[in-house]
Structure formats: C-alpha cells, structure tokens
Image (cartoon, rainbow, N blue to C red):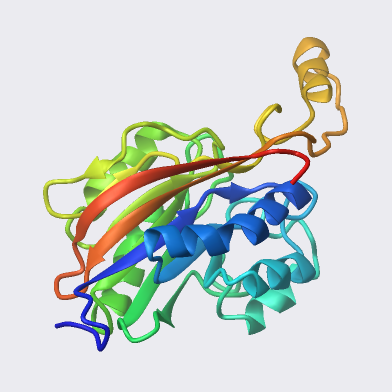
Length: 272
C-alpha cells in the first residue's frame, strides 16, 4: 500500500524526555528543522518532566502540542500536578502509562492520524523495577496491542523504565508485534539502537531534551549535596546549552515493521 504522496513508509520522530522550559524551547525551535531534514510524518515526545523538571501541567502539554508534537507520552511523575488528571481525561493526544490501575484518569494508548499515511498506534508503559509497584507492563502490552492491531499495523511503544534489563526484556517480548519499542526515563541516550530479528526498532533510552551541563536536567550542586549528605534538597532545572535527543524510525506502511532507526542529537546554544 502506498500513500497518495507515493511513500511506502512513515518517518517517526520520537523525542526523549523534555525537561522544563529549556527542553520545551528546544522542541519549539528545532522541531520544524528536524521535520524538514528527516521528512518526518509523525512526532511523539515524552513530557514526563516538562513542567519545572517534574511532571506536566495542562498548559505545558498544550504548549508542546502547539509546537506540532502529535502525541505526548508520560511516566511515573504524570500525576505530580493534580490538575493534569482531568486534562488527561479529555485530551486524547496525551497518554499516561497503560499499566496504571483501572480507574486512573486518561488512557494508555491511542490511534492517531498521520497525514495520508494511515493511522499510528501509540502505547505508553511504565516499568516496575526500582519504581512504584504497578500492574505488569508485559500483560498490559498484550492487552493494548491486541486492541490496536485490528485497526493499524503502525505501532510505537514508549517503555518508561529505570532498569535496562526490564526495557530490553520488553523489547524482545514485543519484537514483531510493534514497529518501535523505545525506552525513556533515565535521560541518558544509549548506543544500542537497532532492528530486532522480527522487525521491531529498539533502543534502551532515547535520551533527554534539556540542559546538557546538568545531572539529568537538574542543577548539579543540589543533586551532589543530596548524594553527599543524604539530606533533602530542592532540585531545579539547570541552565546553559541544551541537548535535544531522540530517534528517527522508518516504518513500512504495508507491514508495520521498521526499516531503520537512527539516533538524533542536537546541541543548542544557550543564547539561541
């Protein structure tokens, strides 16, 4: 099947964890260029830390959506701001992890149009290792993928998890059932991107979109003091040069399998 434009594949851009105002500004300034350079058809960004470095608010989500991000995923900090629950209930383009318990506001997956290239299914999961105990992400993936597969072959999964082993295991578990399984949460881009044997593009972590000279987006000193003393400190989003991290995945429209995955790293001067 080919689109009206003659394309037989869809180029998906997945932007790693957006941290605070610097990360949001990076998305706003660089997304148009990335869309043109890589001929992007669909963009997903993790907004887990987009509001002040922790959680996301309705206003921040709307800001990123207005920047032409098609879908926002989240993670374990999604309920940091109380008002976000009602917003997530009514905004289908914002997802929370699908393995939160029944009765949680919002939705864990969705179907979204990608111009004339068909419909993209996006699934959001959160891990359990070294994180809050929630429902099994493997079982939740089975349930959500079964619901999506009847309506689209183009599926991308955000695996928001701490442990590399859990993300890698989920990647192998999902191989051949989704086009891309990408990890988020640790804010450090890994160099293990590739295609799994049955056609799923995988990377353990796509990295962070936020201040480069930081501790995963936060000012260095308060974090170091916390490690040195064990005492609570107030973390603040760092300043200075910003890095935008992500991956571009080419998905075959006919099969839903990935043709390629490429890491993206954009360094943005603090004066821009």
